[in-house]
Length: 131
Image (cartoon, rainbow, N blue to C red; front, top):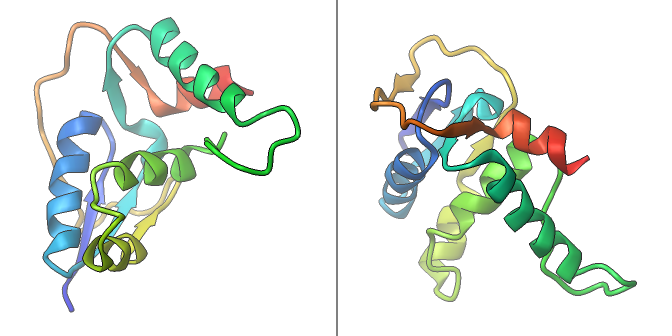
């Protein structure tokens, strides 16, 4: 199997996630490094509020979901999961081949260069607002 490493520094999240999901569905192993430096387009307060409301839905002593993590790499992995067909075996197998890391060496990693949006926030700032 082929192992592809993507550098998340300065990458727009939706574009990175769609490329990663397609590679995962092809059967390749994918690593995403520098997850905390991925940027998400939109207003910082609205994005944090949306994630906070989803987090509060599962609170109240419920062991059921939805569960939204407070760590950057797990949050990115959770968001990429939404682009995979988890109701089928190929989607579940593809999700097992995904690894996300905070920091890491980006030598030989594929870097996606997209134009930055006017308003954006990094995953690191969203995680800071969730705590």
